[in-house]
Length: 142
Image 1 (cartoon, rainbow, N blue to C red):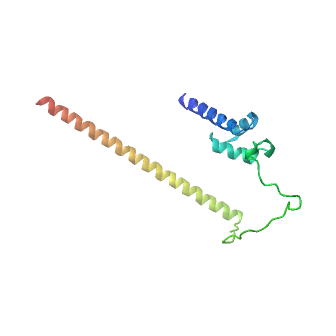
Image 2 (cartoon, one colour):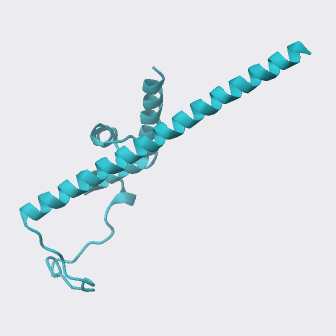
Image 3 (tube, rainbow, N blue to C red):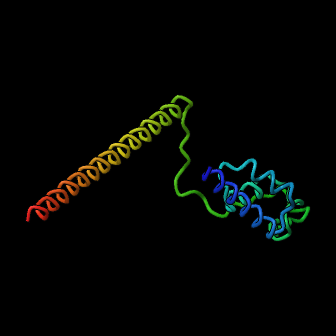
């Protein structure tokens, strides 16, 4: 199908782009199998998050190499502007339920708006056909 052809082309293009950046076949295959979407950006994110650094091309490896003495040391550079909010599991579930309800309402509104727009287009098309028929009838009677 056309969708499959498009997806195959997208996979091939992304594969080629990652290979040009210096990634090996095995890690490119892993990334493309594990990414939720086929894009160079999504694959790069996955590669940099999940592939061992020594398997990454040199340009994608971490430039920072702490000395042995500094390992494990943490320095606070800036404090948060407001304290973190701690919520209970019940509160988290309630917040998630509210967010889900909001997403469903947004989907319902978007669907209703799309249906209204479709109905309006159909009505305009019918009105246009009627006008064309009326003009054709008037022209043929003259």
